[in-house]
Image (cartoon, rainbow, N blue to C red; front, side):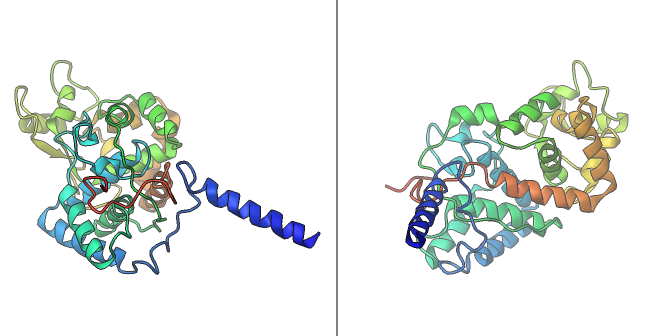
Length: 323
């Protein structure tokens, strides 16, 4: 009887291991995944990132956004990094907008030199996003590792699944729920807009034709000087003009003042969803609460449909699949 119980236990372990080895199973992820195979991994990523941010103040926000746009399209699998005709880089939300690819290239090259064919591009994205937040003054969280890289991109899903900057709050809630994320995750992750900038093309509709009455007047007039009615679509404005390089809760304070840049920011407060309104007010009052919820939501987002085990691959070059 004891031997039968042992056999059944071993079978259960094997089944659990198999279920965690493909998309949807994420119990195979572990913060210590590279402790033996590449203990230098996070140090290498951090050193490249420190230099990148010193050279380009927008780098931190760009790398945080890369991880977000990767995970929302067929899971956290580095599909956003693939080049080619069907690349997700060519989608509406990403084209002429996503940045930071060269920084990821440098991280990958250094990791391949020290630990060949070991650290996935998907894990590099997850670590770079976390470290970008830390270097900007934000919270720390443990990044579970062990993702593998997709061999395919999905241009169609990139066009349909990434939330648009002019979204209603109902559309935002629906797209987040599709990923297993809820209202708290939506508002907390939107707080990532405390760093970075947005192009005029993403918010110009709020300034002209039917001007957005939710915008505070002096802020509205200032935006019009940056974004003319004709042309200037690539001009940029900070998402948080008060402290655009520091990860803090000022983004939420500005929303309460009518100084949120994107429609998708403003509707968290004015879109008639009680949960999002209450969270905006709570985060504006309590930065520690925002940091706690943001870190929790980043962990949750980083576990969206990873490729594990025998699924996917570890790319030698993040821009193309292995031959």
